[in-house]
Image 1 (cartoon, rainbow over the protein chains, first blue to last red):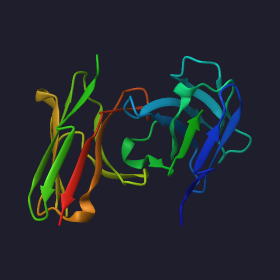
Image 2 (cartoon, rainbow over the protein chains, first blue to last red; image 1 turned 90 degrees about the horizontal axis):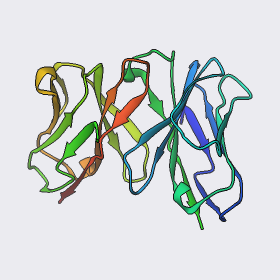
Image 3 (cartoon, rainbow over the protein chains, first blue to last red; image 1 turned 135 degrees about the vertical axis):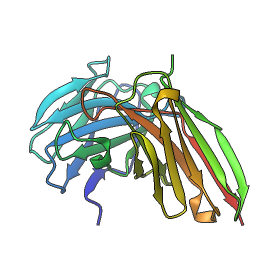
Length: 115
Length: 109
């Protein structure tokens, strides 16, 4: 049973459109994150949230907006999509924001392709 | 510059051979973690190893802080070991991991 659910698994979008990537965790964790993995770059940190509040943002573009409607949800809204946004987006969680990396759990990812 | 560098970028083995994967980092270390990424993309934590040597089955991780390196040794490789191995640094400000580019391992029967 996956404890971090990401939906959809695959997503195809056209340039200029808007999409929302869904992440739900059932681990009872208080911290959630988004990471991105593209063909050209290593897996890279995007955002961290703790108790539904933004803690760190390493994404330069405001086109990427996390949304936390519930404690165990952290969705990622991406607007004005560009082909360079094509990547696999991973959601992760940990018990607390300051937890060691040993307790960081990843979802299976959403592979986004922007045409 | 890139803070975490992994080598080799890819490696092909025959089943039963051993593998040594390297991770070098250019910043001070808070902790080091190794992940296995399945061909389908999901990530599995292998080791949390800020220093010293840790063992788990056929896997051994060794981190030498003063030399700014960590290694992952896989003994008696199996075809199911195929995938990408990633090392990542944890910075001092929380669970923000900086990943290396990975080593893609292929084990042939």
